Amino acid sequence: MASSLLLLLDDIATVLDDVAVMSKMAAKKTAGVLGDDLALNAQQVSGVKADRELPVVWAVAKGSFVNKLILVPLALLISVFAPWLINPLLMIGGLFLCYEGVEKVLHSLHKKKSGSKNHLENKSLEDVDITAYEKDKIKGAIRTDFILSAEIVVISLGTVAAATFMTKLSVLAVIAIGMTVGVYGLVAMIVKIDDLGLYLVEQASSLKQSMGRALLAFAPKLMKTLTIVGTIAMFLVGGGIINHAIPLFHHWTEDAVDYMELIPSVGNIVGAVTPTMINLVTGFIAGLIVLVIIALGQKVFSKAKQA
Image 1 (cartoon, rainbow, N blue to C red):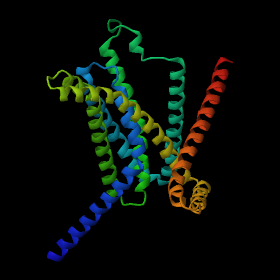
Image 2: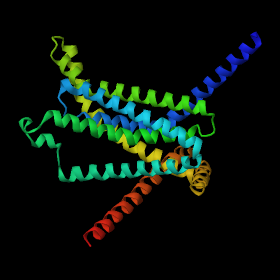
Image 3: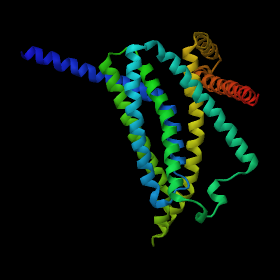
Image 4: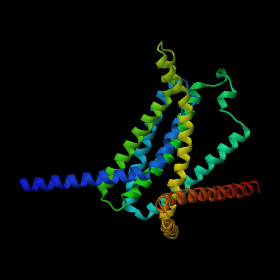
């Protein structure tokens, strides 16, 4: 009896260890999407009144949990009844990430060129229905979260494709809950940095005032940094998925690393960053190709509709 109990405990410990290891692997692979998720959701709150920022973040977080409740069972069903779909879904998710990254880059360049501003800056507050604006923000953020959550779940599923059903369920549950709590906890902290800065500026202590001014200067820079890092991460993750899914690209990357490592003195350093740079370039090129295909498809559809 005692030996059976010890064997059961050993099995449970082994399963928990597998879940921990695979969860860590899945978290690493989805880190790029997580960075973009964080940046996008932090941006979604911009334009919302200060006293409504946290309620809006909480509303989006609840929507994110609902998204995960839909996506995780769906992913598990696919892994049981159509496991062959995992790699194509990974490819689609990777291509979508690359496409979205290119779109963000082009949108940013267009915004700089035209000098356009947030639409709220062009209207007085009296002209804006704040409640409707809030609802639109929340709906838009939840839609965006659904897409990014789907990518996170599919990438995580690809990591545990060969595991048992219970391990898959445990890893996906850990990733879904951990990512949601982590992302929206950080978003809540980020959107309140400027409020903390304003609070410190109003204090009598010169030290607190200096800290407050530093936080107020830091907040917009943090948002810009998150946006840039998130965009780069999209290309890295998307390009990495494509490189691993296409054997020719994968072998070419390995050959390129071996070649770079032969460079005297700096070979190891160059070789270490080569896969990252290849993934970045692959992601950007793949995104451009998808963008062109979608643009051509829209033109053809538009002409067919007019005819």
